[in-house]
Image (cartoon, rainbow, N blue to C red; front, side, top):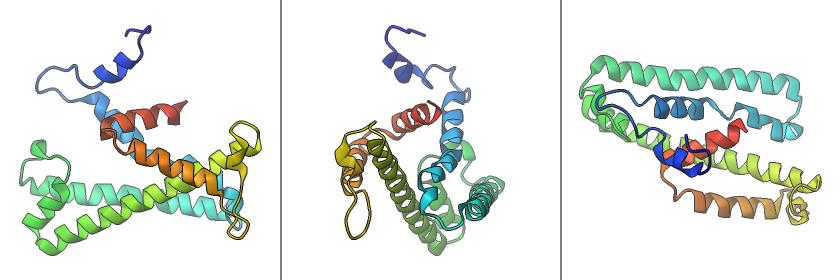
Length: 187
């Protein structure tokens, strides 16, 4: 590892492997990224009625649902194994569902994936803007981010800044974005 130029680490992680061998770095990054985010609830716990009870129930239900949404379709598709799992790429779940079951299931998977991604982005926007708002109130970020809308009590400028940052970051390749997110999540 070249510690004088850490950007090289991001360029080489997951790229140096023997042909045909598993890409363990990408797998670990993806698994960590998929299962991270449960700690973000602490940012908005002040907005929740009875957080001691509600958060515990919500997190338990979330872990169960996330586990089921990965294991059930993945198990069914691996058991079917048409096409071979080693040929899968982004979007394969909906294509396999379309080909093996019918257009209705392929459409449902595309729709649910779209709604799920929108939900994740809205949740990330909510969490990041309130975090930026709290940092501004503590003097760790510019004070403009501490402003709340007088009627809706939302951190208006923090939301705008977060939206602009998301629009810029969405242009990054997914793997780079995932590595950066994992890095900041661990730090």
